[in-house]
Image 1: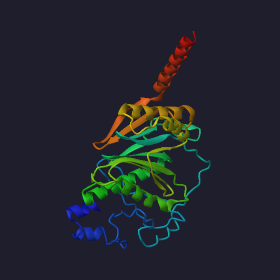
Image 2: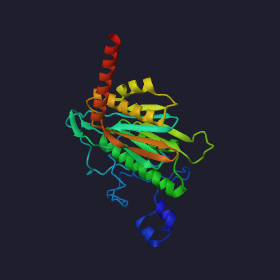
Image 3: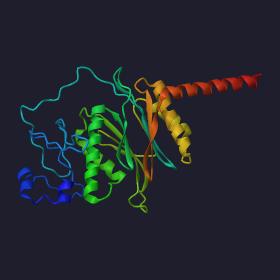
Length: 316
């Protein structure tokens, strides 16, 4: 662990007693991954932060889960280990998340409705999660899977920062997340994360500045200028493709993101309730106060009424 390296407790007798040398060593990799792929262990290892959040989790075994990073094959799970149980009925996942680049940075927006088929499970979910001061991720897919992998990613980025004294780049973060998710390709893990951030470590590097990268649970990694993910994404893309420009002002970009989410939630039954919006710049991320989409609906209704009145005046 990075804290052991910093505090210098690796050579103490207590460390050798409780933390024997692991057979999984990778000298070629500069990113030291914590071994949460060791599924053969029967005891649960937990590491807690100040807010008492467990940082190590059990991950269900998969028949086609391939190891990476030149590691030894995983041991077969014990016979008494619990098996994966199929759901009695399929659950439809639905949401609306989006992110785009403009001259003022990166905008990330999402609705707040968590749905399970036709059921509105929770109307006040946070689908945008800060990872560090210059990076947030928008999540879509299975709520439990997204929360798990966001915590794992936050842990790995924090450990990298402790070891190397600087943040991992946005591209490096996306590559790390892709490597971690790829062994679960073909399973029921459903995760789609959009990394919205700003690289500030090397100002002269062509990779510095705003970054927008999409990573999904089969390991795919895509970089672009605009992404919208979820069941409401076709409606959001309709608004973004029409209005998105590089030279938008901050106010125009915020209004565009808010309208795109509103149009998607107006047509998509699995999206709705509120809109969360983040703006990421070289100074870090800032969060706009959560807005109720009903207010946007009534504002749009008044705008339409004014247009109808103006047309009537022109006809007369």
